[in-house]
Length: 552
Image 1: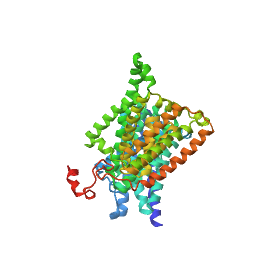
Image 2: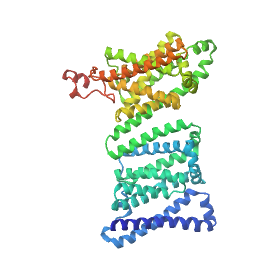
Image 3: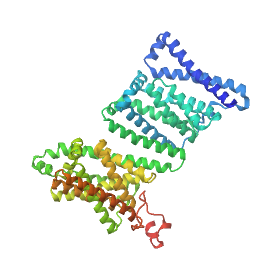
Image 4: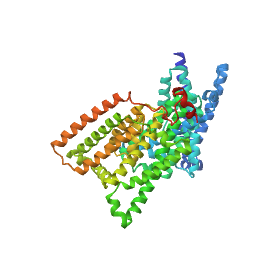
């Protein structure tokens, strides 16, 4: 109890000094100080910098007085805060944490229900951007602000609490205090969650530089986004897009924070995030320019526009081949690996291939029958548009599209995205995130279509996981889309027979999944197949006669 009493006394004293300086400076000195007050009113970053400097000076004086009282037991602010060096790997992880945490809050705060509940987020940003120069904003709010706050709240107050109460209690208390010290409800909520994260990072890395840097990254992104219009762009996104962006950003942020806390696989997690940024980025920077050229240039050529209109999918074939070439050379340049080898086109057992083919047919029949039901057909017209677009082609062109697009999608989403995730994440997380990325890139995170993408990611991912070859999901996709084409050409009207067809296909899909799950153990595995990172297996697990070849 004595420890807790002393801790409460010191915490209340320091917080009291902080609040007293703010009160006196902001309500007594500034309003009646003429030119000084007018200048600060027009330059809020300078205002808070001066207020923080005064508070810091007073706190240092208090610590000098404390030194005289406690003698040898005295610990300086510098030692208490632990200004230790942060490793390059940790600095990289903290940078990514800051980036994705900022994007998380930018996404969440633009969701309509959140924006209605916390309308003053923009007011806060605009208030502290009030300055003669944006450089002052960066210096005052993004550098001086984090430096003072992290030393006070994490370096001093959090450490004082940890000496007297359990870690979890101290973590929660410092987050509550930090949130309470913020100027409005939106920032108080945001600051509370940030303080929890900062407390974890600070505790593990034992350096206040860790949280100062993370806070700098977050603040810089938020204020630059407001300055240059990125936050305004977020306002144009639908709630579903914002929600799924927030989910992805939360996933990355939590993964990195947990990795820092556990202290292992940091490099693996950095590689995972790098891959998740690299491969979708290549897709985005090639797809949208290609789409623009295709729609506005190629499709306007009168001599071929009619044929192209009757063979929509030819555009996918051209794009897939071009993007695959970019993926191939990017893999070669960055990872020094062959994309075909990384994708693992190892042999698939014939019985397995037959079962996967039947599964694909069952999936195709079920999907097409499901969207014949009037309610779903009318409520989700985007699926009708999708299926119409994908199956508008002559048979030779569709077969060309079917093979090239199926191979391309599986290499992209299984060999690249899924493998990157699976290198450090469990199957369930890898499949879920792959599906969300698929929904974002192909369907702009339309919720119903993203659910469709997640269902596909689940089955294709399990085929890839169970049988360790890219042929498994490719075969599945070939028969799935082939069935789409056949069902669309048959153009069967909705009837009771369609309901029976959906029921039979449901049983077929479930049965095939059970059979394939049981067959996965007996499926032959190519011993020379690459692992998740595209590397050859460890020599100890390979036949001695093959070790020399693998080493080469």
